[in-house]
Length: 100
Image (cartoon, rainbow, N blue to C red; front, side):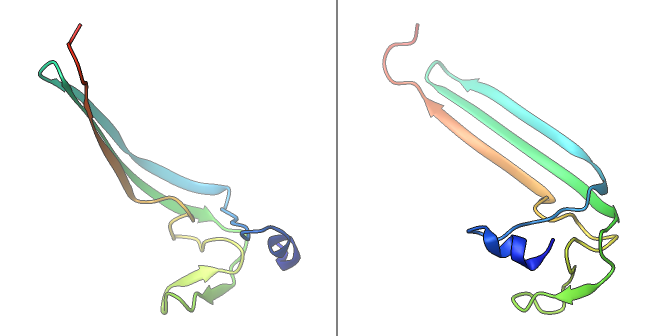
């Protein structure tokens, strides 16, 4: 992505390689604990690896010394940008008043 294009947007720009392998697992649980409380939880594990990158040029992020990134996309063998390895959530709902 040309620097002028990224600079033209208010928050910059990200570019992911369109060629990566991803495999993982997603799970969720929904349970009622008595008539007034409900619990929802979810978890995702994602193992993603770039298989083909737009650029072979390596650069270093000054904020994270020693970690190489591609000039315009992640390097082959690295995790695609903005793809977390693990994510999850927990929600507890309490119902006020009389149960129906």
